[in-house]
Length: 494
Ligand SMILES: [Zn+2]
Image (cartoon, rainbow, N blue to C red; front, side):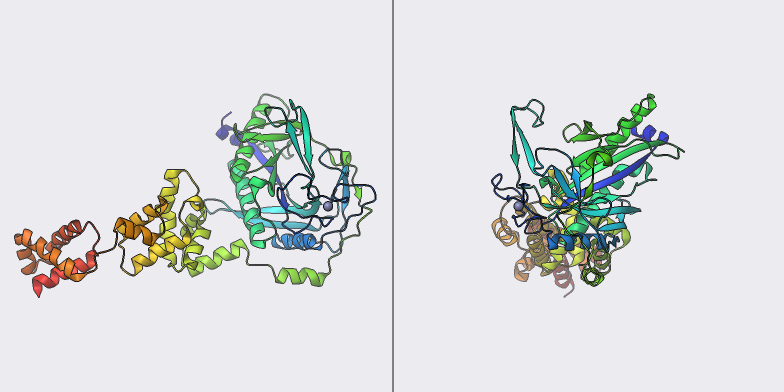
C-alpha cells in the first residue's frame, strides 16, 4: 500500500520513549567511572556487578539532572518518589533486575513544543521522566549478523551496567496524520537539543547515549479505540526514527487491510534496508513483577532545591532562538531556513569570531550549503571552520577581497590549501588596491576604446560600464569595481 493510501485509511498513534545516558562522573548507584568504551569489565565493582551483600547509593548529581530535565520539560517534580525493581533475566544484567522507577517517577505531566520544517508547532505531551540504570553489553561472536542467532559464543562487558539513565516517555501523540514520521524525528531532535543545552548528556545517538524506542499503532479513520502497537527498539539516528515510524505505519496498514491483526511485539529497525523485523513478544508490566527497591531510601527533593534548580536552568533552545532572531533581525522564514539548514550553531560561532550576522548567515545558508550538498556531507562536516570563514568575511570588509575572490579563498580552504591568508597568498588573490596600477589599466582601456571614452567625456556616464568591465578583465577580477568606476569618471571629467 502506498503511503498516501495508508494515511487516507488510518490514523497513526505514536508513543516515543527516549533513553538518555547522563554524563555524570560516576555511575547511578556506585562510584565506578561513567565513561563510554574502555577495556571490557574495567569499570566495575561489586555493586554494579550485583554481587551478594553489596548495597547501592543514589548518585546525587543524577537526581539533580533528572529534576532539571523534568523542569525543562514543564513537568511536575515529585515531592517523594521511589526506585523499583524491574525483574527479568538477561545476561547483560548481573543483578537479574534493573533498578528503575515504576509507579512513582520523579517527573510527570509535562510537554515539549516541537517545530516542524515548515514552522508548524506540535505540542508533545510528556507522560513521565524517570531514573534508572543502563545494562551491560553483549557481544555475539562468530555469526554473520552480530545477533545471537548463529553466534558461536557471547562475550559480556559490564562497563555500561549501572550508568545513569533517564527515560522520557510521551503520552500518545495523536492527530498528526501523514506527518507522524516527521513529528517523531522533530521531537527527538528537539529533545536532543534541549538535553545538550542542559549539559546533562553528550546525546550521541551513534554511541547510544541517546536512544529512541518508537511505539506505533494505527486506528481506522473515525475509530475511537487505539489499535495494537509495536515498539521498534533502539533506533539510533534521527533519520532512522522517521524511517522506522513510516515503515511501521505502512507495514501495519498492509496487515490490517488484508484482514490480519497486528501483533503486540518489539521490533528491530535495520538501517541498511529501512525495514523492521519481529523481535520478542512484548512483555506486560505484570511480567516484570515490579516492587519497591528495599535497598534505597526514597528520593524526596525539597521544594527549595527544586526552585533553585528551576531558577538556574540555562537558556533553553527555544529561548536562544528567540534571542538570536531579535539580535540578528531575522524574519520567521529566515530563522526557519537557518534552523532547517542546521546552521544556527555555525553562524553563531562565526559571529562570535567577529563576523556580521548577515554575512555569516549568507555564507552558511547559501554558498556553503551548496558545497555541502555537492559533497553529500552535513554542513558542520565541511572542512572550513567558523573562525576561518570569519577571517574571509573580515578580508572582504576591509576591501582586500571582493565577493568573487572571497569565494575562491573559501574554495581553497575547502580544498585543504590552508588558512584563508595562506590561500590568498598562494593563489595571488588580493584585490589590486594600488591606485597607480589601476589608473594605468584605466588609461589603457580608455585608449583601446576611444569612442567610448569620448561618450563618457560628453557626459554619457552610463558608458563607463564598458571601461570598468575591461579593467576588471585586465586585472582578472581582482580590482574593486566601485573604485575603478570612480577612477574612470575622474579621468574623463577631471
Ligand atoms: Zn560499580
